[in-house]
Image (tube, rainbow over all chains, first blue to last red):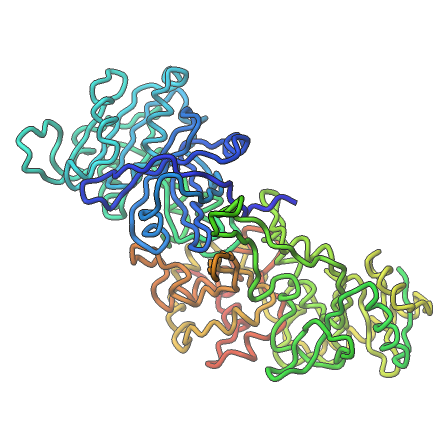
Length: 281
Length: 348
């Protein structure tokens, strides 16, 4: 019988400090057994348990994209015991990854649709995975307009800055990068909170437009009315939730919102689904 | 269906004989009351025990269980690679399990053995186990098992159902596993099927007279959000001290925590029973807690058992009416009363 608790062994191939305050690092992992990479086939929006023997496991969204081969990437905020330990690990260290876990953004439904991606702070990891996936030459024609609203506290707190600025230069994606505030006179993008930038810059909804929203609770709370003003219906707003998790496979019982388990039935839900369930997230 | 009769004088000899094949579990008295535990070679089950303090869920789902291990010694090959620990899945038999606890195992199975994932620790232990049940002749005051799709002589989840007839047991063999166990014990005195079944029926009807009933018929009709937002939760939770006793004694509570420990150069990952009554159960690393208050946690427990589970699996409530939580609760919270409130609730 397959044991879903056994992680795939991986080696840390690269560690990058992701934000100016050093609270986030991006880890690149390579599978110790090449065959495990195939077993780990994932879709943008899924997560995995990063597993450090003797320390514990943490559920983290997959930041690399299914179109990127040979490695997997995770951007991790240092906040608890496992993440702190991980931040102190070095290139070459061996640990584990368990997954892929959960559902994904509804790529089949999004085909031939306009996609508006709205992210805030460090909840941009699976959104990065999604953007890279959609921009891949093999996939770009499957989607209509792509808009991205992404905001952070300051320019140095934006994740994946180089990629953001590269995307900004392309004509097949509309980037709306914003920061809460900056004293950088060279800053050439938006200033202001994500909900305001959404209200001013996101395309108004028609039946072929879907918004994917991922961010801190306060951003989500104020983005919803902005999207409603733009005409988005509940089923057109797609969100990725987070809850405390242990098993990641729907068995340990803690991450439920009503009868749905965030780890297995989610983490991706439409606002329509979320509105039918207790908001215990 | 085969019936056999077992003279009580032959019982211990038969059980001892079966030890060649089975690890034997059964009710025994210890410093914490009566429990179903693995029996030492010279110990025999206390078959006339009442409701055990803890349910027998630990036979398949130990309170603490090693799952994986790894060496952290970098000089050893495969260091930091977690591997499953060796398990003992040799045949085992649980003697004297009560019908409500056998049904509970089937409800827990829905969680650990589902189309998407199978928990190998639970599933392999389940496959190795034979359940020899004993009907409840004298239900306790908290027993409401007839209201939960079960009852004092329910056969669900059992391999053998026995009835205590003072000087002998009458045993109904329900599965091949049960047949094998009876063979291993040397119990082979056939009893007349029709006569035996009518004896079972008489005992069942007699026992059912002493069981209280609770209505659950309206629960599936209610809306989750109506029940969730109902005004009675503050009252229900008022006296709760979040001790978690109800969840630990419950045969259908399956929640667990996963923790790592390191000793010298060996890392072990194990799981422990957890409880939705604890604030830490849902506490995010950020400090945010979606069920940070007592009333939210109490509501979660009852909503899970009496509504979410009902809607998700269509197998009735996640409760078998054993009454342990009612008897053990230090502040007298009674699931029968909460169930009635929920079942009768009409939103305005």
